[in-house]
Amino acid sequence: MELHQLEYFVAVAEEANFTRAAARMHVAQPGVSAQIRRLERELGQPLFDRSGRTVRLTGVGAAALPHARAALAAVAAVRETVAEHEGLVRGQVAMGMVTSAGPVALPDFLAEFAERYPGVEITLSEANSDVMVEALRDGRLDVAVIGLADGVPAGLETQVVLDDELVAVVGPGDEYAGRDAVSFAELAGRPLICLPKGTGLRGVLDREFAAHGLRPRVTLEASDPNVLAQLAMRDLGVALVPESLARYYAADLRLVRLESRPRGQLALAWRSEGPLGPAARALLEYARSAM
Image (tube, rainbow, N blue to C red; front, top):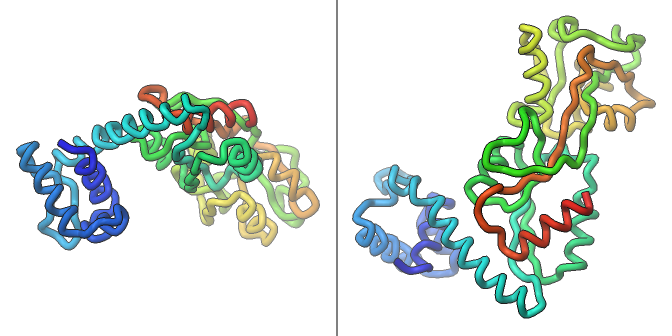
């Protein structure tokens, strides 16, 4: 088994296509196919189902994929460690963030980190928290800013970077506009504007409604909390957002507290097991101090 065979295996699995995988690896497609066949012969099992229009992992391939990623990560860590001992931190780091991480000044942080560590290349992606938790666990992400709904996800460690009360916001003409607080029973009868399922803040709200034996009537969803507030300005429903955002729109919206005063958290997250390369460690240590 050779290192480049594992690289081709991971590329084909992620691209679901031999031609795209070859382009990504900057090699000819027949070479990728030949190396995958050699790897399959050595393992004695097919890694891919080639019968359809797209290439799919077999059960064996799906089971082997996390180990192939871990092996490649270990090799990258060896190379980065050597560079680190030469006095330079180099390498690549994959970072994720939720779209709703508006109050966290991530662009400023990344700019400062890049200035301090110019040899580190960062790739940044956005997704819902549930997607990023899985990406952290299987090694596709090194570090991520996620929303917490039910404590620390298994297999991860976290550091809370934002803890904010969740509130309702409505337009000045809304029936709740003069209220100090509103119950979940009352909210259940109103059209609600929320973040989508899979986000930490939505998980907190769904849990609160369930605890009251209620089901929310969500009529509009948006990944950006700013959009939620703007929809509420147009009297399209009651938006449920972090208090810090509600204060930002105080001139146009009315803040109404929720009876149980639920809180949402954003946290820096990383794998609790498995090595992090020097570049990823540098980013994590810098983020833990800066955030």
